Image 1 (cartoon, rainbow, N blue to C red):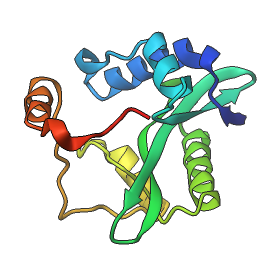
Image 2: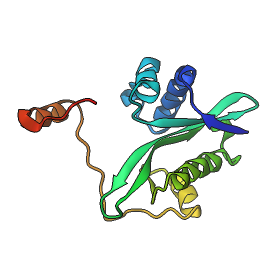
Image 3: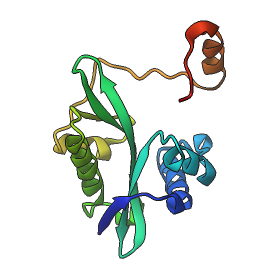
Length: 167
């Protein structure tokens, strides 16, 4: 098995695995990622996230996608693991652990104080796996999300004098 950084030419493979993950999580209706979107947001002039790819005998079998965060309380950066996925035929072979260990190594090398992620509450196998590695649930916290129309409505309330640029 080999784990390597994703490249722009991996975009189609990543999209295929993202769709497999969405099916597993029963969220396929929400999987809208396209190869072009990934090329723009992972490999364009201002990357928003990074991804690593696990290969078995040269065949892609899993990925992890993560991005930088910052803890105001710690005064230190962190990484947020947006998704980790191993194809069903390759599970229980240590590939998920190797992907997560690689993200942890990247975090340590970058001086990050933590790695965080969300897991669906019904996904008992993943929760057990994460706990076996020492992960702790954040029971007193709930994830909040704005997207689509509510996001646009709130953005429209921002003062025009805010002065933020895209640079």
